[in-house]
Image 1 (cartoon, helix red, strand yellow):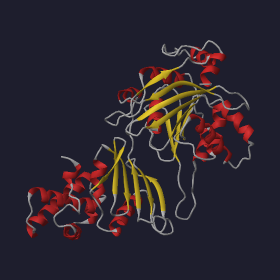
Image 2: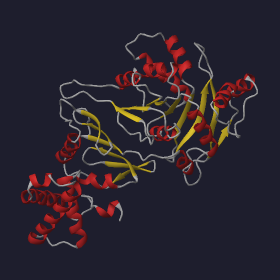
Image 3: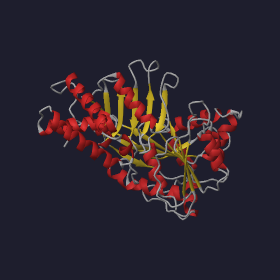
Image 4: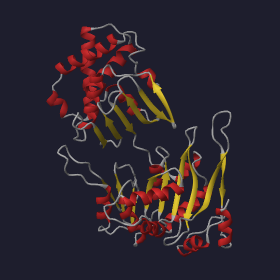
Length: 445
């Protein structure tokens, strides 16, 4: 049964406001009938089953007269209001939805398959939306009010939640829920066209040969998904430390330590930043450090770790191109309280970063690796990047889909030699550049 047939939107239901009043009435009656102390001792599934049973008896005893479908919808909505997140509950159960966006009580959008659509659902009032938000943030011991109008948190079930309320949000309380991404393998990403077999061979070799890799892309391009897939090539006998704002990575190796930053409490104390965690991880004897996203002064610590013995580290950065990723890393590193000249940061990045994998989200919603580059500059030289793979996109087809082809380039000799010394083959589609002149001609294009 589809989502829209499982729940009747208020504006589509025959009763409209009357329908919302019916839900509120039976929710109040339900709370009068149950023993809250007893309910708290039950598991979630048992609690829902008990509420549905009690509510079914109430409706049978007191009315109204409803069809089987209407009765099921009413029970569902009342129990969702009493126990879950109201009209958002079915959305969280729909595996095809990757993001839920509530823009005030009257507008609810979701993202499916990379496309955003508006649903014919709404909250009964601003107060009802605020009750739902308060229920969400209370599960992570946070509160939202005029003194704390913004909350960014991760639910126990893994979803990432952002809340911003009036007076900061002019259109009403705004709630954004990003679903916990399923761990995709690179083989699965090949199936959906995000990359191809030759790129899988290359990326596998780069990870196993301990190249430092930065995954770059705009919001929603799949950086975390790709980072998770790349981490699957790290040998199982290595000690891996993951560092994230909201824990999303799902590494399968046996020796993984997961660290997550912590915001300040309501008194403004107790904040633990990504930078704190990166610094601490260096004292934990890591073989690999994986940072979910660098977005501040921790970039400097990450670069220093990459260039001082922690080879094979992985991180993501928010940028629209490989060139932008380098400049953003330099800007972020300069945000550290350590006053490092830009020239020294340039040197640090040239020393630390080996590979940048650029992701792009196309107009049709597809997410694709659009470029893989290596950094060939040294010391304080100007950044010099060399393309290894590039996606040449064609104009959208009649069906709106974006097609194109991946173009491969010979690998620089230094990169190929490092793969060879690590026992990793050079994928046949690439080959090795004859000399630096060949690379120069490629860059000049």
